[in-house]
Length: 177
Image (cartoon, rainbow, N blue to C red; front, side, top):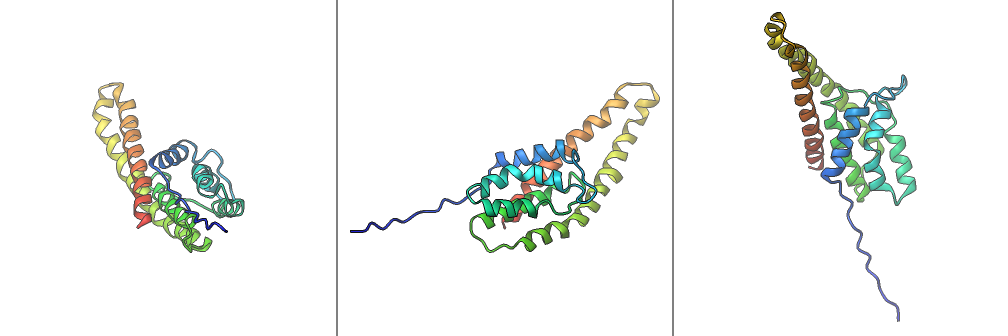
């Protein structure tokens, strides 16, 4: 008598801990290996590689394809561009769970969002936030207060770090929808 085994395929899920690791790796190592040919692609790949291993670790062919897919040209504003990481990971998760998502769909999404998010990010970060913070601390600098040299940097660092983490998690959440 033959036994019929129903194998229940466990769905692969990305956790908040995975997203935190992606955020951490990207924020601190995003431009550690900028390539003239691919710009930020090595950093993008480094940031998401633990999640790719989690999703495709049991399938070497898919893992290799994902590695090649994410070493394609990538260039966006570092902090607002983290939304692309989240959306891309949501697509990779769906693909790892059997959804018919092509390489072209993932790369097209990344390519299509790079420019607009870079424009928004540069405007917020370099055109609005930094000048506003610096102008707020000019009176302190005129008085010779040492806080004028440290204050804008600390406030900017906290604000942009919070924005980056929010964007990677929201990108993932909205990318699933």
